[in-house]
Image 1 (cartoon, one colour):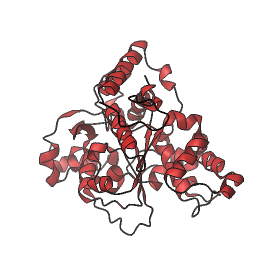
Image 2 (cartoon, helix red, strand yellow; image 1 turned 180 degrees about the vertical axis):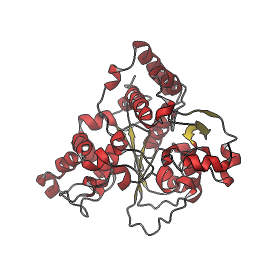
Image 3 (cartoon, helix red, strand yellow; image 1 turned 135 degrees about the vertical axis):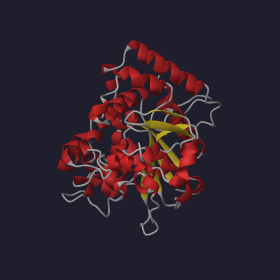
Image 4 (cartoon, helix red, strand yellow; image 1 turned 30 degrees about the vertical axis):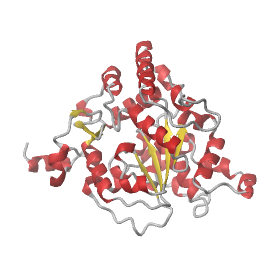
Amino acid sequence: MSRDMQSQISAFLPKYLHQEEVVAQEFKDLIFSLPKENGWVASYLYKYQGFWHPVRHLQGIITCQRHFRARDSDVILITTPKSGTTWLKAIVFTLMNRMQYPIAQDHPLLSKNPHDLVPFLEQTLYVDNQIPDLSSMNSPRLFATHIPFTSIPISIQNSRCKLVYLCRNPKDTFVSMWQFSNKLRPKEMGTHSLGEVFDMFCRGVSIAGPFLDHVLDYWKESRESPHKVLFLKYDDMKENPTVNLRRIAEFLECPFSNEEEESGMVEEILKLCSFGNLSNLEINRTGKLSSGEENKVFFRQGKVGDWKNHLTIEMVEKLDQITEQKVSASGPSPPPPQGCPSGTLPPSIYLYV
């Protein structure tokens, strides 16, 4: 197919489905020399620095690595896809901007999707070889990413910016990713069967995968640099949201005052950012992102344990075995925080099996 024909076809597709035809000339030799596998949504995933990415995201990662300049005051939210990203964005945006945007009828979350309020580095700001001028943004700046730790821009690693990492049970993550990707696939391509993508997930071939490598790398970093990386567990966030919201606020050095606590600010933020509230807003039922995804696809159930309704016993056993092997092979743990037994991984990872 000629490049002109590819461009004509791309003009009719939403941006998130643009693939190899969007790669800039300067990246072609590198990207097209990488190992590749069939993608979950369309085209291929490419393996870069040990992790798999759609070509459009990958070009954004490389551009971000070359041009992003972190500030010490930056806050970056990090997840693997379908690990509670939308909820985390809503919570932290509301928390950090609670003085500028008091919780009221005109709050930005009531008219904008969380992904519009907290942009992805590689999927929004640096996508399609864009080099945005972020110098005029007021501090603290708030960004999000799915970039693995091995590919995080050097300026982030060398700065004192804060990283908030949200981890989710691999079984729930997989089921949510399977259903999400099928909603995004063009109708003419049909849907992936559960078994087909389960094999890919187990081999580590998923967006920003291998999943467990992504999680373990950031968990280790949180142990070595607890002042820089806060490691959260989605299941804990759902079970104890008030405790974890206060924990995030303390980590970001914007704790709730006594007056805010007494006024019910914590509960108000959680109510505004709840799955039920966000999913029923008009903007999230009918709107779209600039990249073409419908906002409603980011709100499915948000439940813990939905994997029990989809995975077979054999699938569960295989994922548990892979998790145990990955954890065991991850090497000696850094010195544990107080209250965590020496040489063990915390329940936030190990008890997923």
